Length: 189
Image 1 (cartoon, rainbow, N blue to C red):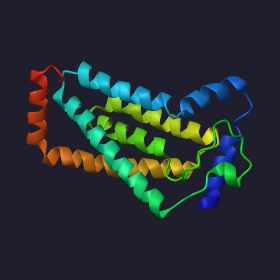
Image 2: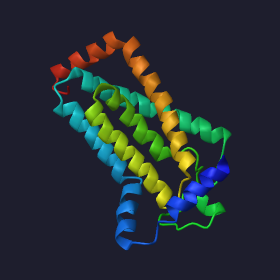
Image 3: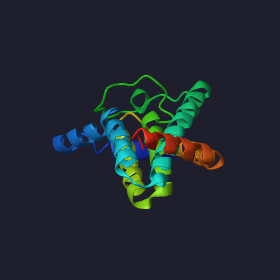
């Protein structure tokens, strides 16, 4: 299984270094900050730009999902450490050298934890978020800092966290409805 993961990594990462323009674009996409800030701005746009209370609840579910996904990543890292690909394989490294566990990808986990609750509520907007999450995950493999299974593992953890967040939102519906009504009174919803 890990051999397949390594072979896929070598194939994707082997594309790096062939085009300076492609490398620069993909480095920007793989950046730790650019995409996460973009996703957070997207959540703000949904929160303040939508007249749908369901979309605002999706943003709340995304925030809960981020917290749960982060907890799952911390627990995973506590029990399992996977070295980064650049420490084990010949790698075209186009990024700084992170020292934490390669599995699961923190960024892929958080991006998908945001994406799934949005997709659950609005397929069109959610598809944009999920597509950006997948592209970012592939970019992290391309630049040499994650194996493909690290990204996939992050997506699975995000799915678990998102389903739990959506369930929490459903069982506590009356409290979240009250919260939204209160926020409306002060022009925050």
